[in-house]
Amino acid sequence: MRKMVSALCICLSLFSLTACGSKKSNDSSNSNSNELVLVTDTGSVDDKSFNQGCWTGVETFAKANKKTYKYYKPTGKSTDEFKTAMELAIKGGAKTIVCSGFLFEVAVFDLQTKYPDTNFILVDGAPHDAAEKDYTIAKNVVSITFAEQEAGYLAGYAAVKDGYTKLGFLGGMALPAVVRYGYGFIQGADVAAKELGVKDVEIKYNYTGTFDASPEVQTLASSWYNAGTEAIFACGGSIGNSIMAAANTAGKKVIGVDVDQSVESDTVITSAMKQLQTAVEAQLTAIYENKFDGGKAIVLGAKDDAVGLPMETSKFTTFTKDDYEKVFADLKAGKISLKVNTDAKTADMLGVENVKVNVIG
Image (cartoon, rainbow, N blue to C red):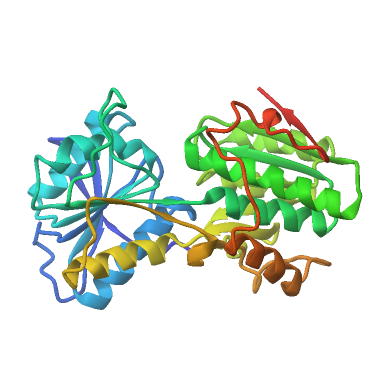
């Protein structure tokens, strides 16, 4: 997805924290008060993936409703650094903070009662204490997670149905959402292989340990492509940029993640999507209509039309829209049961029968 914002960056030396924002043109450029705030995880709002999907939800709602808004990117990955960013946002006037990712779970738990007048929207996680014993969600917090295994399933199923037999999965970090994507991808490929009666489907599987684009990720992807991998599911924010570059050089293909990434590269044949923007906008709307359903954990999946493939932009050759609608309907109706991150320690322990999974590293 094209970069959505051109942001003014403000140096905050006291906290050594990057804070960037975008405001309506009729707001004072000297105002430090921002009603809506997104705090990113380790990625950025232009990662063309998870963070950007959440940021687009904040930005779209704010512009439509004339609210001031900003994003903060913490300086590191620790709970303390996340809390510093969140508290800085609150001091800057934030009434609602959207927290982008699983890594915020402890930070939100720690701050939810300290700041009862601030609403927190935690995407891809549920608040809990550091000991993982207390999972209380306060009334000013809503937890949103997705059935990524369903989106991954659709991508794996479609790829094999379209004739791909040498696949790869490169995830960023082995976080629950990423693992669910990967496990679903394998299971979808397995079912498609069984239906087609093919026995030679193989999937290389690895986590890069980062969500950032890097020469190392590109080199790894290139080595897979050169060894015969036809398409890689790039499941990890900006690592997709490196994988797309490798695919372009090798003349191979990529499956995108989180948002429709077809505009990023001609190598992208489809994307395993979750409706991040829609989910964030829906919660912001609820807040301002006094309908915020805080204190709850929400899981969104096919039954909510919250995951899927962008068939309008997908570049399949034999897998049709009718094929997609049939398998999606089965998912939506609960006819397909999928294993998730808690059901298998590693990807090669899922018990699939028609796909060879090679866990690397």
